[in-house]
Length: 238
Image 1 (cartoon, rainbow, N blue to C red):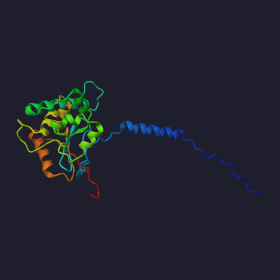
Image 2: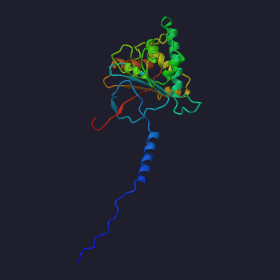
Image 3: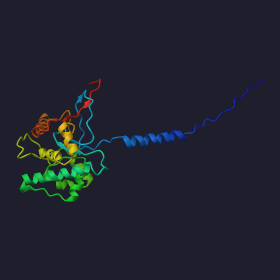
Image 4: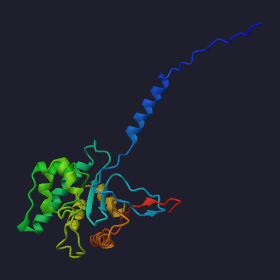
């Protein structure tokens, strides 16, 4: 007697529901993710056991490259849509106006002139680091040329000039920028800087000690004694 063959069932699987779930998950991650901001140089921070996270808003971050070049980035309030808050672009525009004004006051023979178009371009830059004298030329470059310039650590016109100056009647360029950030008018950022949450220093493990020392010494000279040192979380291999 012959065997009865079982009825074959279709192996077709309806993936419509799975596709919907995938799209929803992708949308969720796109809307809730925090994208890394572009930096002029890759910095490998020292490792530590600290798990405290650096805030992503109301922050002045100082980056020191392995070559000893100093850069600064500024972020304002997270809720930029609220007209009563200081968004990142608004605070950057105010900072550059105050910083250039102070520089011109101290250097009347080397005044820097910025147009409103220059100020607007500066407001859209996440991280900057050129001497004041080079700022107008830098801001009038295309985005591509700016990226090429600021990523070339061999250039003399890249990096914010800094030294061990302690005379605040004649601040150096790094001190001028930090004073302008503190007095920008954003009370939330000022309060964060007072608490030590609004300043973060990020340096490469191979950065020259003298440059890092100058940055920390400058902050202390400005009475900005509370700040964070950015590190990578130590692993079992470390």
